Amino acid sequence: MYPILLILHSSLRWLILFSFLYALIRAYYGWLANQKFNKLDSKVLLITSSLAHLQLVIGIVLYFVSPVVSYFLHNFKTAVHQEQFRFFGMEHALMMLIAITIITIGSVIAKRKATDKGKFRTIAIWYSLGIILIVAFMPNW
Image (tube, rainbow, N blue to C red; front, side, top):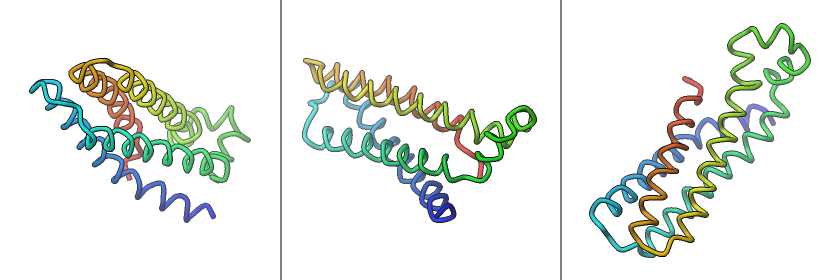
């Protein structure tokens, strides 16, 4: 189960990055060009947010079946000083959870904005913060 989840989790990140890139381009363009927030924008927001949440669920399951995380949790005092174990056992998981929380908050706030410009601006700002965290704490491989 672990290898399948790891491949799925690693592969899905590229789809998510492209989805975020597309969502951010639409958000910044809509904000700066004062565009109307239309059905496509709503779908992009929903799909991007859903993909991020799917990735989070896979990541949570992966966290509990990973031998790397298992080693980290059972040997915390020594593993916390080893970069690879600390990264997967603590840093990556925590920062991805924070990033998805930021993205979710941004999505909820954007849906409640009264103006189209406000929706685009909210998505642009919150999604930018989320994607910066995701890219910064994504494994290099």
